Length: 73
Ligand code: SF4
Image (cartoon, rainbow, N blue to C red):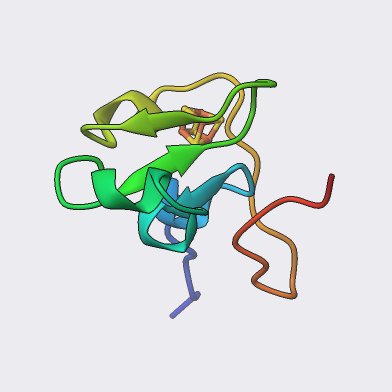
């Protein structure tokens, strides 16, 4: 039986531009309860209330092998 790989499902958890809001500097991390992920794709980080937007985001990029959660500047 041939092994089949499941397609990579896009999400904040595996996008190189996303970081847990809890890891953001103060006072931004205070938003973590209602907006658990922060997108760093744009110049101004955006806190995400839901990750549904990530499922179809054309700017999603997989994280590198280091598992780095915040992109290098
Ligand atoms: S909005 Fe797009 S670029 Fe930002 S974290 Fe989600 S998938 Fe990544």
